[in-house]
Length: 379
Image 1 (cartoon, one colour):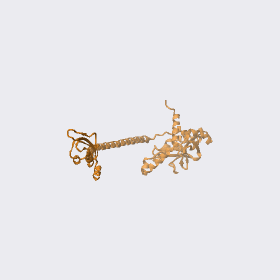
Image 2: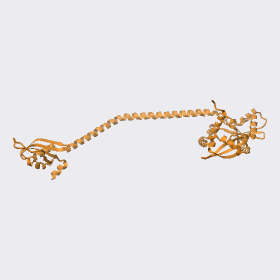
Image 3: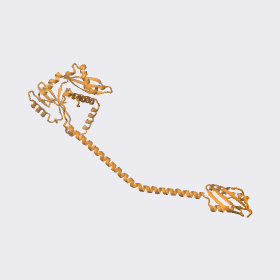
Image 4: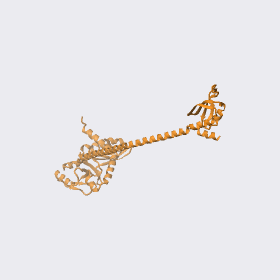
């Protein structure tokens, strides 16, 4: 089901009031002025012209057309012209203005309207026109249905709105609009002019305001859509270039990884070989020399002593001697003077051998380290 036109107009007015009361329009206007100031004057004048209001006033029976801020009129139309002649004269006077930008404004003098400054709660901005409709009876000597009014938000705080209300009696505005209609002129707005400068309001109610379709809006929308499309395409191209560069970099890294892996493997093998060589050298240095051990045993053991079994373990360093001797009692003392042996002692029981007449023994001694060996030699 379609919405009623009155409800749509009310919603549009609420949205317009909320928009005009926000700080965003002022920021966008400032930003626009700053950007336009960067353009050359000729280009700015040719391509960036906006709505151009022209003021219509009656001076006795003469219709005068003026541009805001200029005292010299653009045209003065005497009474008695037909609507066709009036429109032709207006077109000739505004020939340098794009018809899409031309706005005809019926101008009221400053004494034809009442101006009041109101302070309203911020919540009133959501439906400012309706709130002001209730304020007309209190702020002016007229009823709300007897005036045309409009307002603008001059300032805003966290709690209050400073609103300027402008109201003009219908008894003043309606005859003026009727005279313009009789001349075939449809105005876009009714405004109040102070010191040749309009206030920038429109006293006409929303239902009577002219609805203009900007022919450049469709072009601007197409340009904006094209800009967004090209922006997306440029971003896609940039992302594609980044992906291609990343893929190429990954390929280069992958190509360099194989030689690097081989170098790392060779380095690992070299380090392992160095560690193994160091370990073997250390074990060799720690292991006793069997030739020296046999030489010391030969010098230390007396004649009449035979070794049947000799066992050497390096961890822990220990020597085991099993054999027969005719001088078993002096073996320990003689082995104590061997530089490579320490703490010699008999293990088990010394047993005589009836066949050979010698005594069987088993001696265990500790292998000295290099430091112990040097200390034993010094001792």
